[in-house]
Image (spheres, helix red, strand yellow):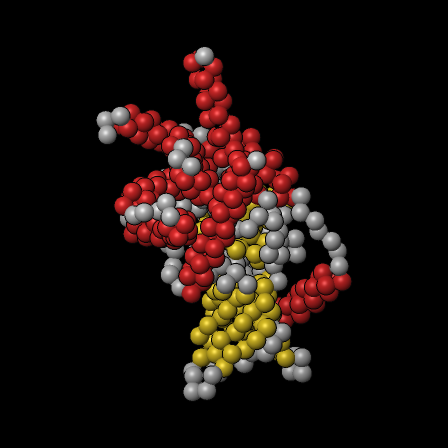
Length: 248
Length: 170
């Protein structure tokens, strides 16, 4: 037992010094370029499905803008008058432990990132939020993760009445595939294809970031709530992301 | 002669540490890498099964350290997980007969389960001690993940051991 005591103290010292003196920075400094190269090495091809999805996003954005004009007047308090401040970041990789998974990006505390900030893809769709930050790297929890909870609004636009309705709720990821909005009162009228945006109730996530569209509405007899299945529009395997900083 | 031996063992240690770094970086950054496969865990199990104590300790210290760097859990989480896992598996292998074919099979399969249970326990302890904000929830998805982890990692260990055997026979 005495034989192992010095080894134990050396390991303990190594650990404490590494993390207290931010020794990990040296490691990330050396290996970030290699990791970026590795992650960027995946093939990406432009196919018809992708073009279709892009058009769909564009269409949803237009729909959203149209309805947003009306909502603007009613929810002026939620909106920020200034434009988004953002920081571009490269994805270094991803990790998983049990049902927790996270994306590692190459910007950190030194660039002003803090936990809770929204991370969007190149189309401006929300893909997750920052959960942990280190000096040079940050960890992003994808929106589709079970532990991800984001306040959202469903915008239903009635083209006949030229009016839009808002249904608010909390969306949660499920099985790293879809999003769900639970406990939506039956009195709220929503339809398949309605767009879902961030509601701005979170301190660090502004209102109006595109999340997805309603894929399915689950209603069971004698139930007082309905459940909405949402198809996330964000890129699930992003290579470059933008972190939206707080407005001044 | 002894000097040469020392240099060789030092070279072996340095090469092994670089292998651990390589393994961690590949598992984090290669987009096609299966997320349920834990190469550090596989490396530790292989060192244990091959009875290479230095390798076991190097994997625990350096593997744990690099996994901690990329993890959302607090520093020391994976080091402790790997350390506790080694202690448990050592006790089990001493107590039960694992030299038989079926014993060996259950040892590898059970190791993956034990590792997952240790991670779950440590995540809960860290969470309740307020050292971490992350808590692994036990649900349908968790059980599915554990089952898949056991299959993938055990298969990988068997594959490497079989390759070693074929190679050594040649």
